[in-house]
Image 1 (cartoon, rainbow, N blue to C red):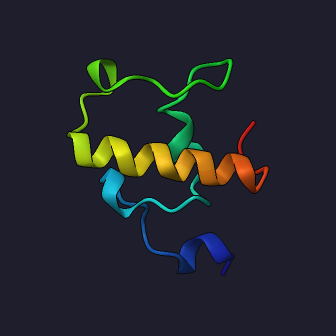
Image 2: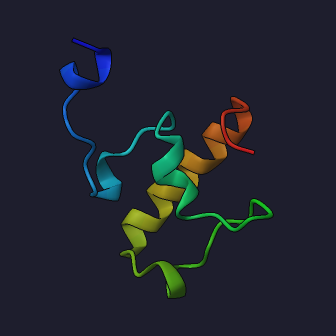
Length: 65
């Protein structure tokens, strides 16, 4: 068994993301690394704030380009 089979499925809810979810957070950034506005993401304001904070944390940890 590989490690991928032991891990639970990733949640699609942005409130359950962590700063380590690089693929999930990349949906909310442009190719140049800017955070996509709430107008285009369709998230609630609370979810947008959480995603923005996670993206900024991931940038600081140099996990996201």
